[in-house]
Image 1 (cartoon, helix red, strand yellow):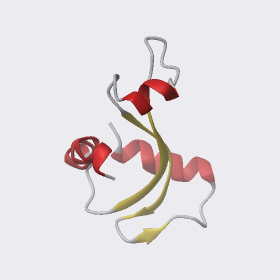
Image 2 (cartoon, rainbow, N blue to C red):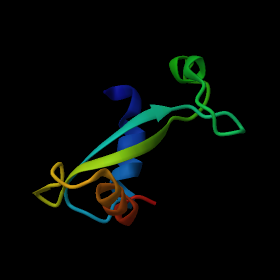
Image 3 (cartoon, rainbow, N blue to C red):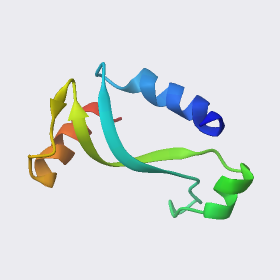
Image 4 (cartoon, rainbow, N blue to C red):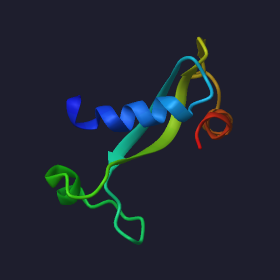
Length: 79
C-alpha cells in the first residue's frame, strides 16, 4: 500500500532478520499512545506499526508455538 511505503521501509531497516511475517496494526497514536483512527485516515499524524505476533521468522513457521513464545521471538527482532 503506497500510503505506508515509508513506514514499511523504516521498519525493514531496523529489523534484524531477512524475512518475517508479523501480525499487527498501523495506527496514529495520540500523546497518551491511544490510536486515533481519523488522524490515520487524514494522514495528519505519522503512522506507527504496532506488532502483536510473529508468524514466520527466517523461514521457520512459528504458528505451532504458544503465543508467549512467538512474542518472545517478536521482541527479539522489533525495536
